[in-house]
Length: 521
View: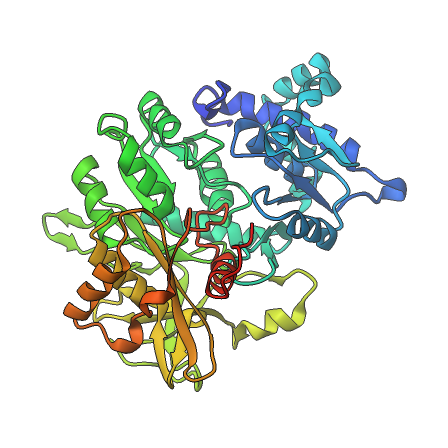
């Protein structure tokens, strides 16, 4: 803000626009209010503060203000169940939640004790405090920092708690330090040629670790603008914002990208320099369709909430005289980012696999979380000699590029053989010829063969018999093919708020449909 005071810093689809100086002033003023609201007796008070807001200027400012007040921001997942939300609040001991009355109404969520409404903050802060905060931005950086408790924190202090998506189990509170977040930010600075004229579209929620690190803190700490929209699947609105602000940087999931490829125009995306996707596998059909329409190739990255979140990244090829380098390969999640190491080992013995051999992916680096909140046993279960056990199956190629093949938990053991569910889905996707995901495969217990496959599909034109015939013609092993009666039509593929498959809901749906019961709501 001191370096680029007049440059656009934050904007959103609600029409709010703030320069870097105005954003800093707003954060300073808000931080005083946060400190007052969360203060306790005898110097105590809230250690963690809840934030229940969508990606927006208000959401960004509140996150910065909470840190400036010396507190830990916890962005709460407003797409999860009421039980999971309550569990997160209880785990963190949250007593104060910053939210918006308008947003609560849209969510149809009742107000609760301890909620502070964004609509009332302007009145509570007052014009005098805002003017004082604006004047404070003229002070030297060290003096500004000295006035706020957040500056007294160290790199090893907790920066945030982010709850895992809960796609396979109860969400866990992932403790990330300032060092974790900054290591990821600095790695992305090195990978991408980011300049002051870049502008990022922020559609990932801040309760998503990629949204928190990459769409909130990466722009703020690099002096380029972030433009937010509160619904990542509202493709028309996202396209209009990209065109209006000449967006150069799009971070999304394949699910969101699929919606943009259908609705957004070539002109709206003409300014894009980077399109980076993560959270789920990028299908080749979608990548090809996106490139054909917008003339830019999506780059696939990989990470986890426990990794702050980025661990590997594809990057643009370098094609300069005397300096040619392959930065990405189709189907690959790229190479480890700067400061991160990766190993692929035998899942049982943890002996390193050879190049080309599949094994369990391990990650080590400054991005690895501090641990799970209040759960040292679970933390220890995913760590081995400083390496984080991802639970993903992958392989290296001769150039060090990594290709994911499946989750260790997304294998079905049928008649003693391991069947990759993602591999079955990919084969079905190819058979249908669709760019969007039409089918998801899960497994259920089977008394004779251990497990059996169940396929859930969408669309009236999806013909299981035809798909099975094509799979047979393509030579897919019999163990990899669900029975004809194990295909079930559903209204929509279950997704989490982050865009990932809701694997828990998928299994519940499959179990109900196989039993002939009504599917769970």
